[in-house]
Amino acid sequence: MKTIGVLTSGGDAPGMNAAVRSIVRTAASMGMTVKGIKRGYNGLIENNIVDLDIRSVSDIIQRGGTVLYTARCLRFTTEEGMQEAIKNCKVNGIEGLVVIGGDGSFRGARDLSLRGIPCIGIPGTIDNDIPSTEYTIGFDTAMNTVVELVDKLRDTACSHERCSVVEVMGHGAGDIALQSGLAVGATAIIVPEIGFDLQNVIDKILETKKNGRNHFIIVVSEGLCDATQLARQLQESTGIETRATILGHIQRGGNPTLRDRVVASKMGYAAVELLSKGVGNRVIGLKDNKIVDYDIFEALNMVKSFDQETYRLANTISI
Ligand code: F6P
Image (cartoon, rainbow, N blue to C red; front, side, top):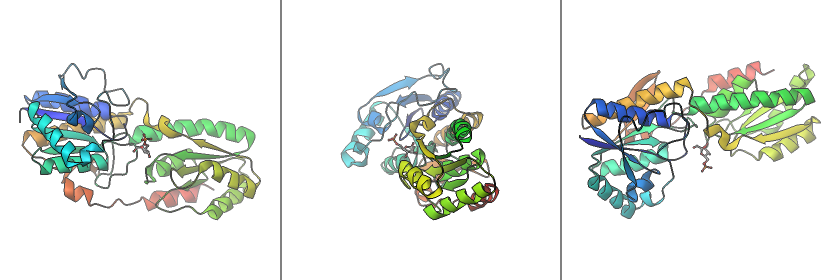
């Protein structure tokens, strides 16, 4: 393989740039050139493609977001869009492609692989919601952002003796809520894998209040309830003044942490290594903290398990 392409797709995640940098430089070390595709699969369809040389990726390892821009592309799910993308791969001499994104992006990579363009998926999303990997690029940075922000909320919740309901992202996965909830000492963590029981949360607050606690942090994963309404219900039921904060897209920004830079660099390297051997239709993952790869079909059929042990631990010590 002489030329490969790289694109970032779906929600941006800190560390995507570190992966792009690693891909470009690993490819260069193997005598291959890299084309950067702008705005995810849209760039393939619209032929928005630029050359990436080793210097063009200088000074991006520390930057959040993605220098290639990103998008969710509906047209790519149609045969017409797919054929246009394949045509532009040929026009640009792209023989293999690295796709950095989530499960939806992997489905696109699978469909392209089926049509003769070998693709490798790299998990990049703050949600850590991809079953085929223990870790997705961006997760650590997002969690650290949540911790930093909730620590600030705690200062004011403590001073006013209030309860603070904090909604975090997750896209149907409770990983951000669980890990950051444990790290901020939340009184209750509400995640989709366990479900939402209002009475349980009320009981927990009242129980810990009896023990002398004067402020409360409730971390809730997005999509489970309306955080503002939850705050109102908690205030009415507990008599404790309660405020809601939706952290939103701020969780997606910021300089990637060491972990995200290192994992992204390793995954980028592994993806190029596979393509250099002519191997496609694989996704990179982390298993027991080691880089692994799976067939995309197999990966897309895996089921994500929830870390029940950490959930129990968080509950046990939040008294
Ligand atoms: O997948 C990343 C993510 O930030 C999710 O946590 C969230 O549900 C979604 O993207 C938000 O998407 P958008 O940027 O389109 O609002």
